[in-house]
Image (cartoon, rainbow, N blue to C red; front, side, top):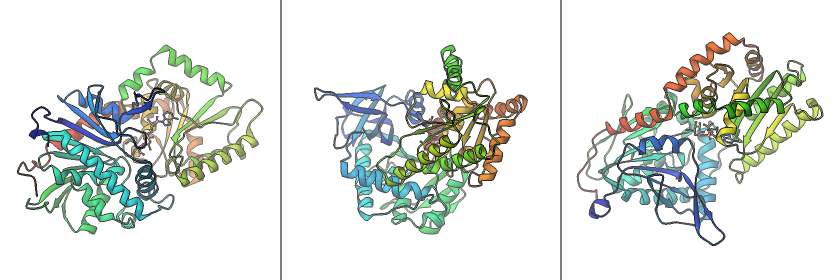
Amino acid sequence: HPVDDPARPGHDLVVVANRLPVDSRTLPDGATEWVTSPGGLVTAMESVMRTVDSGAWVGWAGTPGQQPAPFEADGMSLYPVRLDQEEIERYYEGYSNATLWPLYHDVIVAPVFHRTWWDSYVTANRRFARTAAPTASEGGTIWVHDYQLQLVPRMIREDRADVRIGFFNHIPFPSVELFSQLPKRNQILRGLLGADLVGFQRESDAQNFLAAVRKLLGYHVDGQTISVPGLGAAPVREVVAQTFPISIDSTAVSALTEEPELRERAMQLRRDLGNPQHVVLGVDRLDYTKGIRHRLKAWGELLGDGSIDPRETVMIQVATPSRERVEAYQQLRDEVELIVGRINGDHSSIGRAAVSYQHRSFDRRDMTALFMAADVVLVTALRDGMNLVAKEYVASRPDLRGVLVLSEFAGAADELRAAVMVNPHDIDELKAAILRALALTDEEQEEAMRSLRHQVMENDVQAWAHDFLQRLEHSGAPDRGPKPT
Ligand code: ADQ
């Protein structure tokens, strides 16, 4: 416990996530080099970390079997957690990404369950909790992220009655009927309820969670507040479930688009495509939740029935390699690449593809140039916690041009009401939405984009993190009594 050690008073704010915000790389001489991987969460936390005296981040460093000593980076203390190869297979690829991920995304593919995966999930979660618990200062705050670590809040709580614990679920929370299928479902709920505040992307996620707690655990729920029987001798604890829609660093994205070099890059992209009238873009991790197959099906039919002329309208599909060792992802990649191959075989001319398919990562600048070059962006997720691509596109268009086609099954649909909304399961509706998007006049684009930008620029990721931590700060006063024994 840090307060027993006056030399190490602990951190005011500790973030716990599956990954550290840096990757370790082993140099030829055996030494370790750290490379920062600036994702959305890192950006959000940077601004919050600046407001506390001392911040820390607990997570896996990305290399199996290694546990480097804690170190400092970007004004934070980083505490690496070890994951062995077998744990990566069972805890991460298995229980997290082949059991929880498909179940939480409404069973788009069948969840697989193995008891050995669960055992490993428990062991790994315990290791994250044991690393995190002693790093927080007396009365400090610990913020746990995402579905890989749902047992961590309770595991920390058992050790530390004095800290505030927040949990944020980045992905959807399924309906109680689907959640009930999950073996060990009650352990998961009890794990989450170790937190004082459980945050979700959209209102329906919070409601689903509250319904599961009521139905499966029988706990009393009043509005957003759950009464949880205390651990040990402690009285009833109150846990709040609330919505905090995540966002992006809107100002930074928007500012990038003002750079002459990026404008030139965007124009060059269009020239490279042969200066088509319309550029339509999809950007996704190659994941079955993103509706890439539905989108390509609609696109292929639009080309096939002559509604779209491939000499005038080009589609770019960026598909970031993802979870390549999980079977459903290998299968999806094969299917997507088969469809793209067919479309291009039928509709490309020599030297000019009907669908430009990019299976790789782009840096932030290239990604922004793509958004600047796109007349229409297609977000057709079958289920998605939020979908940041939708918000990034909007932030990239201070010129008020461009059209966002947005699935009603993405969390972003609750906020981005001015998008062209679509049910991606309905291929005819999807085709009609694409044609409508392509036909919008400049004035119509401007009107919609102005409304979308208002939403995205006013609600950035810094505000998201700030709101969550504010709410956590005002949640039920932590029990400062002695640790339960
Ligand atoms: P993801 O499922 O990864 O996130 P998303 O929200 O779209 O989905 O974020 C993807 C990010 O990766 C975006 O910033 C995007 O620009 C970037 N990206 C995608 N392809 C890329 C490429 N080829 N090169 C470089 N960058 C690329 C999960 C949930 C979401 C939720 C977020 C945040 O599934 O629903 O919005 O967490 O909570």
